Length: 263
Image (cartoon, rainbow, N blue to C red; front, side, top):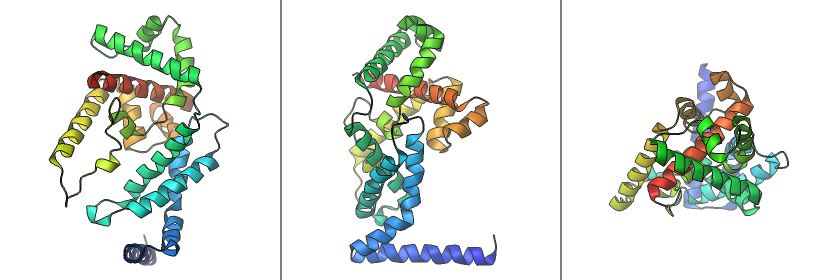
């Protein structure tokens, strides 16, 4: 990177910090709009990730529009004193706004929701009986379908797996978003900290029980922010197959977390 590029980056960072200070002192619409314009690429990025694997009738432009509302909400509620990066906080808010809008439209057909619950119950029964994560072949046998039919079913159920990772942590609970429970150094709530640690522990335990390939998909998608296409290149499989693996992993995680919650 050249000296000119470094200077330009420093200047841009200084300018955005000045905007934040101005907004904190006088939260005008003019300054808010400038912040929205600066962080708008985050909305496009999150909308693109959420839109991966959705039905073709779901327009990414609609996701972006929903995400903008999440970005505005993030800007208005962000507290720099908590020591968090705004980008991290905003991406959670943007994703949440998009998912809330999708849910409000009831975009998943009722029959698909029913099949998803059926698969989760089968996973729960098999997990309790086998005391391990069942294979696809075992799950197919439990459901009374062929392995190929199960994989086709995963393709249908991908509609139900577009969830943020904090939704998995909150399975069977009313604990809300992890963003809302991030620690505030100026107002520590010991009970909330313990609950958050327990949620994270249970999620880690559930992920550890997944098959190796499912763990890789979850790690690369949620923690490394790779797209399904990029994960396919890592694993040497098609994007469609990665979509199936992602759906399977999410269903298994949800089943395990609900089981742990005693629901």
